Image 1 (tube, rainbow, N blue to C red):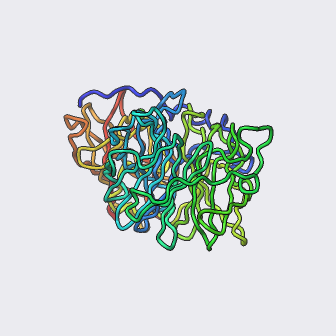
Image 2 (image 1 turned 90 degrees about the vertical axis):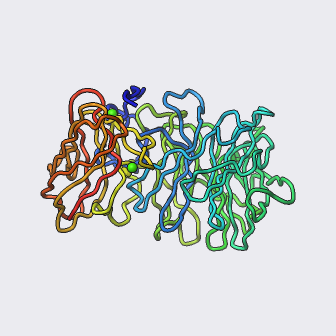
Length: 463
Ligand SMILES: [Ca+2]
Ligand SMILES: [Ca+2]
């Protein structure tokens, strides 16, 4: 490939305006500095409907993908990201899309992935081409990042409703819940791709799911997006409530099938998106609440972004109120700059996008003069001596400036990148480094002439 398709949006250009416009909570940082913001957690594309999963000490995040400029829920693929520190997120691309399901027509909407016996099952709603109505499919893969294939070649279950969530109880019984406007579940068999006992309807009582004011067709607050799990023998159903705009509420029960008791609001209506979608998980001793909003430039109800907050359960197991912030979750530990780090491991990106790399995984591209990548909390220790990056350029290249603390912070090194004869013709460049000591935020700041400069696959410092 020798040409680059111009992008339809420019996230970097409008960061400050977006933070001013985003109707974030009053508890958020009152004067957010875009250079310090880390939430929403993905800036290279619009993402929605988060579903976290922990595997082998790493947190994987499954999301949808709102197409640029959408004026409806125009979604064609799902995406995977991962982190081991809650702030630097690695882009694993899209190992699952509508074409994975030969019977699917459109609407790659909210799903959830879980692990069982070393396989990864990803439950997603799509429109069944044969019926024109929503159905739930299941994809299976051998790793949390796929590749994923259609496990059945047909829907797992279909009754015209969406938003699957799956939960494996401690006794091994798995449950698939879903529904909008109703709430349903099936008991999944141990194979995770079939079920027994028929489709069960969970009664939407006001005792169980609250009272919706001024509504006759939906008497309870339950709207969509259930997320079910168990903690300390208490079963939680977190869901998007009311519409529109939605807030996040929850109910609890003594067992996986109820009876449910409404427990109130977790996240009030906030954040420039009229939908929201919960994903709750514990990781490295903390509890995390994933959601989405419209906080990126160009963001809104159909151009959403996944974000995360850390929280602590109350002593009785109830939720505190969780507000959207631009700071997000604190970093857990540090990032090791002396190990190979993927260029697509990012705390905050301005101006860049990602794509599949010919060397496997993803690379960063669409790099122009002034674009940058923030890597938060790199543990340089006594000091770095040199920096190496894997780069490719079909044009004349440019330079990677290594800035500390901010995009215009101290310059620790500068690597010149020359043309390599193609956007996927990879080559290493190295340069000396000075002043990179202690734990610092690292900014890869890209400079050069006009147009696209080069791609970066990975980078690594030497001590
Ligand atoms: Ca760019
Ligand atoms: Ca890479």
